[in-house]
Length: 535
Image 1: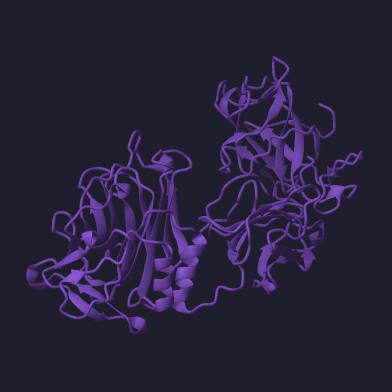
Image 2 (image 1 turned 45 degrees about the horizontal axis):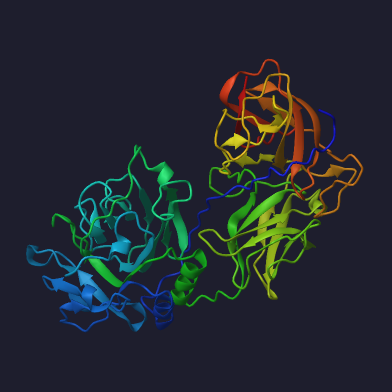
């Protein structure tokens, strides 16, 4: 393969998982928070602000009185809550479990393999919850069999963790709550129309930010397990077998028939705490290599290189979804501008909604020589606080299929029929021709993070201008641990994306799932491992 850019429209960008924590105390059920709930049209909504002595929890949601909750064994209505509001306190009064349960079953839309959002405000006193039982459900519906119910449960002896999932199905997410304060606990479930696949996922939010996420494809030991939520009542504070109980206070338990966005949940939390959300924010460690989403052991983003394509995670109120209409990329997109050390960055994508709002930008080449960059996002003249991001000369990441950071590499070569072919198992179902690549064959793949180019290329430009540009630092590429000849390591035509042309070494191992890795010349930074098929 010659030392030139071979343009193929094969680029797939990766998805990401990012977690953060917030510690601002929650005030229970402010009027602004309740307005947020009402705006999303809940199916079921127990405000739980009925006066002391009540025996009925009114459903303020769209289903109406048919799902009013009946109180059993006299839980304490009118229990004190922050912000002048009230909730319902539960205990095991006189050896009898106190709970609220509907007379009717939840609707069909919440059965089977449903899409929903369920949330509740929960207060747990440090001296209130007994050490046993181990799990104490505080909201659930469905049946008792594997995958037959949706549940929220607390484990007091397991570091005050919340567990949410489908009972015994293997889909379990956890997060730690604060004692002696209110916690907003939200589970967003997207079933993708009832199909278990890579687009099907769940996110657990605690106090407005993600605490855990998973997908149906990761159900532990679950080949063939699908959520099959059965018809049944909705219950607050009672296990199906009456043997477990939760001792705490609950307010504003709500079930929505849709997956609420991260921005809606963040706004709910902001209205609980009185924290303004008019200004954008960049998550701590939220500037990540857009191909590998590399993280250090603490879960924060590692260093990025000049010219890299990066994804910036955070909260971006006022931004609108947009993608760059052409090359060179614009420096203002979807009401957003981003700067690195004061230099405006080209923008590829603005995605302010969904579980993980993010922006995709190119790190300006002007940060070369800096050890850190202060990243600032500005939306409608409102600027975020600077987020410090480490800068290194080179930090490679490989684009993969599927775009998870670990998957089939986009190593493209000319196949036996003369067509462009991806080096993956034959008939891999990737949407393109696939077949193992013979040893000694030339191929190319896409990466980002190789650093500055020689001669230089302007920020936001594709670098295809009749001149051969290459990264100043030539990367090392290995396949199955064997070094490959690198013929070209320069612009791909996509800003921030580099094309690397290689020859598969004769000594490379054969088979599927052979790791392809890019390393900086000094070996200090190693990319994510893509996988290729070799014969």
